[in-house]
Image (cartoon, rainbow, N blue to C red; front, side, top):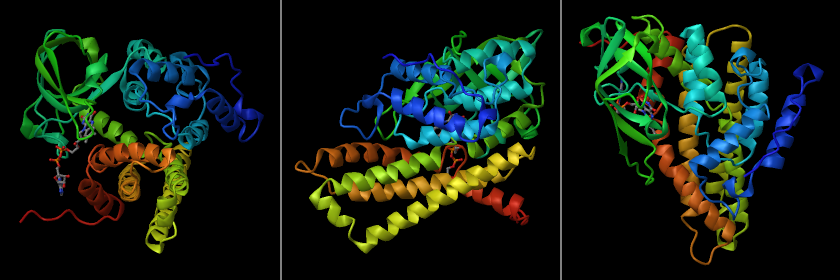
Length: 402
Ligand SMILES: Cc1cc2nc3c(=O)[nH]c(=O)nc-3n(C[C@H](O)[C@H](O)[C@H](O)COP(=O)(O)OP(=O)(O)OC[C@H]3O[C@@H](n4cnc5c(N)ncnc54)[C@H](O)[C@@H]3O)c2cc1C
C-alpha cells in the first residue's frame, strides 16, 4: 500500500476549520477501499497494513498533534486533535493498533518520564516503530486495582519483578509494557506502587494469549518470573505509581479515542443504509419500534459529542477532568453497547438472499456486538463509574460497610 505523505501540514492560525479540512481531504483520498468496514471489498487488515496506515496518518499530520515538536509531535492544541478525530470518526476505518502507545503510554511518559525516556520512547511511538501494552489488571485486581500483587524489589541499581497480569491488550505484539507494580505490601493498597517501562523481550516474561468471544486473541496473560530491569526503566518516583495510574485511567476514560461519537454516528448511518438496500430489512425501518430506538441512539450520540467538546474546552482552559472521565466512559460504553444490540437485532434478519450491503453489515455488526460486551468492562466497569459519579461529582457519601 502506498499513501501520499508528501503533504503540507496547514498552520491552524490560517483560519478555523483549515486543519479539519486538511484531515478530511487527506483521509478521503488515502483510506484504501478494502479498509472501509462498509465496503464490499473489505477485508481485515494485517498488522503490517495497519502499521503502514497509521505511519502515513502520522506523516500527514493526523497523529501526535498535541505532542511537543522535540519529541516528534506537531506542537498543536487539543482543538486540532479533536478536529482530526471528528474526521477519523466520520470514516469507517480500522481501530488503531498503536493507541495504547499514542494515547496512554505517551502522555504518562510525557508527564512523569525523564528527558532521556521522552527522547527514547515518544518518537518511536508516533512513527509506529514500537508498540506498547498496558499491564495494570491482575486476576484478583481489576476494578480493585489497588490490591495488585505484582512485586518489584530493588536490588542495587536494578529491580526484580515477579507476578502476573491479565487481559493485557496487544501484549503479543508489544515492544514495551507500561507496568504497574507494588514495592510495599498488599495492605499498603495505593501507597507503594511503582510504574515501569519494561521491554517485553526481557528474560522471564511469558505471554499466554487469551481467545475472546469474537475468536480473536487480542489480549493475554503476562507472567513475570524474576524479570530484572535497570533503574532507568522506572517511570516516575517510587510511591508515585498510583497517581500515574489514575492519570492513565482518566485519559483512558475521557479523551482516548475521541472520535467515538462520530464513528458511532457513521455506524448508525451504515446500518440504515444497509437496511434500505434490502427489501426485507427496509420494512424494519418502517416500524415505530425500530424508528424510536434509532432516534434514541441518534440523540445519545449527539449528547456524547457534547461531552467530548466539553472535556476539550475544560482541558483547553487548564482545568483537570477528574471524575468527569467516568461520566464520559459510562456514556460512550452504554451508548455503543445499546446501539450494537439494536444493530445485531436488525441484521439478524439477513439471510442468503439478502443484499450484499446487508450481508456486509451483518458481518460488521456481529463483530461490533461481540466486542461491545467488553466496552462496559475495560477502562473500568459500569458499576464503578456510577459510584465515582455519585460520590465525586454528586458528593454523596460512600456506602457504609456495616
Ligand atoms: C477487551 C478488554 C481489554 C482489556 N485490556 C486491558 C489492558 O490492556 N490492560 C489492563 O491492565 N487491563 C485490561 N483489561 C482489564 C479491565 O481493565 C478489567 O476487566 C476491568 O478493570 C474489570 O476488572 P475485572 O475483569 O477483574 O472484573 P471485576 O473487577 O472482578 O468485576 C466483575 C464484575 O463485578 C462487578 N463489580 C466489580 N466491582 C464492583 C463494585 N465496586 N461495585 C459493584 N459491582 C462491582 C461488576 O458487575 C463487574 O462487571 C481489559 C478488559 C477487556 C474486557
